Length: 80
Image (cartoon, rainbow, N blue to C red; front, side):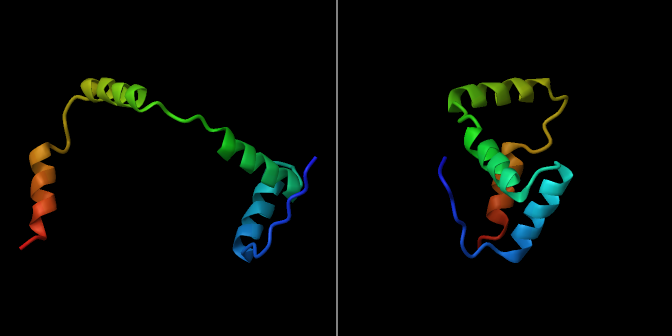
């Protein structure tokens, strides 16, 4: 197995890792490995699939809270 050394780790981040490791009943080393696995194992989302799911979700909403006109007005408000 490979060994990884992390330099200049901010104290606040190390404390968060320690706290998280304690909550999960792991060593700090095991917690770092678990965090890296979680981040690196996340699946990339296919844009077409993502947009299709968003369109389906939007159709199930009872009302649209922000319209395209609302967005246009909001974008142009600060421009003189």
